[in-house]
Length: 326
Image 1 (cartoon, rainbow, N blue to C red):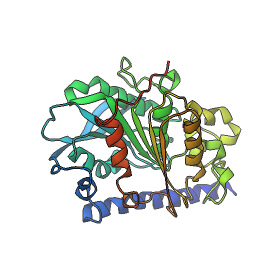
Image 2 (tube, one colour):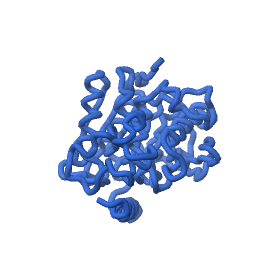
Image 3 (cartoon, rainbow, N blue to C red):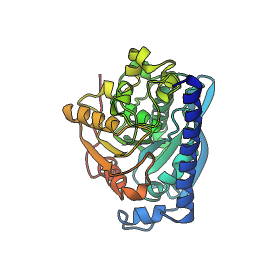
Image 4 (tube, helix red, strand yellow):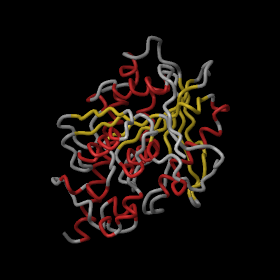
């Protein structure tokens, strides 16, 4: 397949992905499913009023100022809040942090401190810039834990697609010095305490092995190749360095992994591979396949699975999830 043809297909696919995100947000706003509906089953008390801080600066990504959108209860809870950090998807080339806000509303209503963050796109900077930015955000939250009244030992991350790749990498790569970056707050750790991975890439060199996808991931124009700066099969070491699966070890935090079985953008095998690696390392992991689900399935298809997972590992139902790699 010619380079220009693959590039054209990718422009179309990114357009479709962005329109899908907007469609989901439109359903939320229109009332097709609401934060209140999803929270009702888990929250005995009425939803809290929340406030939004739309552009909190948390560090530098090269020359870029990095920002997060914060959602939190208006009334300050007596105890420090658990925190959820959202990483949006878009093939590491498009999207923005506002894509995460509607997903986070119900958690802020139930007493979580929530943040949806910026990270640099692959056309701005090659990997590992993206994970540098994500780790900077986690360090910032720990640096500001007292000011924000959040619990630095209960920080979870949640990503979709390319954002899920970064969320999973946050979960498996604690203590990996080359992935920390120079964005700021280096005196604070960047490990996380729980991970929700929704249909994220985990092992780039095995993405085409599943077959049946809409495009070849091994192509020079694929998102994975653009992320590392060249065809992934020609640069196996760079590709491996970007794989969450490379860093899996026994002290990783609990994972919840969700994936549609009919996903044609990120193959279902990517989640199967990570689940197997986490189980082999004896890491707590829940796998939730969505039968017939495409890339970007709606949250109504999975019920309260994410809510239950974060409540279990970030609220006071269990001790903080360990993650203390040397």
